[in-house]
Image (cartoon, rainbow, N blue to C red; front, side):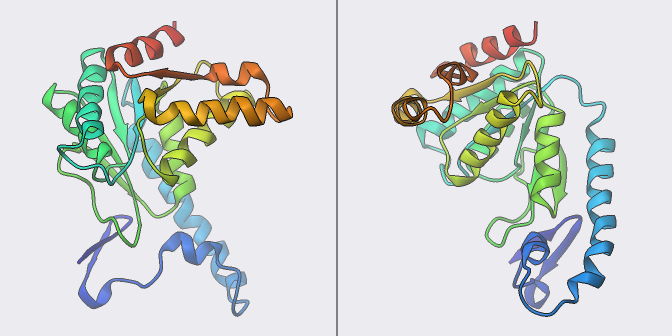
Length: 238
């Protein structure tokens, strides 16, 4: 097994039993965090510096999210390839989490069209390294540093069907737009059949209970067409 820990690669007995994020967030046990956490700040700082320095001249880009579990041959994987290709054809770099599944598909589509294919990897116990179609990659220890890069260097999000991680990125992006933390930031949901039940729940429950406004649903755009997804992103930036 090969394990990526930021820029470090570990194998065999060197593979840790917990992740860097896990140790940062664990408040149980002895109080030695008082002495170790201040030093962690320097490591966190280094991840931001590395990310900013690497991506600052990336140019127009779109972050693509989706499941790591939907592999080649699955219709959503093939859709992710088409999305990556369409973005490059429109002049965008493609940013993904750098993992397998639909992330790999979007990176593959970008590379096939001769574009910039970015992978922002993360230290996880069950996913290791960047997929083979990333031509600009950064490995992160901390989720929050990685998430900043997804938003800061993208002009929009395209969200394919996925699980908890995909939903996390989706709702964080919606919250940033809703609260005005980012402006002119389009969010496109790819896959009508997959996302429609969620949108119906948002309307029938959250809007009905008054926890979000009807207009908040307009922050999400739904389509099955990669070309339309790219058009939505481009028009939102003009």
